Image (cartoon, rainbow, N blue to C red; front, side):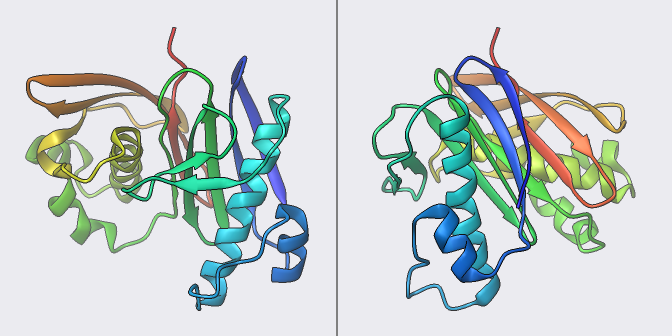
Length: 208
């Protein structure tokens, strides 16, 4: 079911979907069928819920939804509109963002103990030190790096070196300062995060 949609300005919004439906119900809501090559039942539900959520976001900003396509790197795009979109899955949650003017990245994750072992492989030493043994903070860093990766949209990046997040004070919600560092090209990105009992969410802040 559609959990929430939050507007970020004209042509900008993000949303969250909590999967409670069956596959036939999600097919009806998204007007699509899950591809035959997706075999895992949860992945099929995530695929359909992602389309249903993007459809809801597109209609929320006053446009008609005509489906998605993917580029050579697997990044999704709308078939009939130039807006940037981003999708994230962490069963039973699906998150999505849409923006008429700037590239966006969104990521939703659930806090798990395994993040402690994953952290050093994707975080810089400074980020590891800032997160310490706090799994919530590790999860925010992980989500933020995933959001930067989706904004970049290509595969020639190392999470530890090319995607940076400045240290931050942990709260239930807040802002993050990110950097996509592919010297000589460097792109600053402002992000927002939210922490709930069920998940951590990071999304792109609207440019000002």
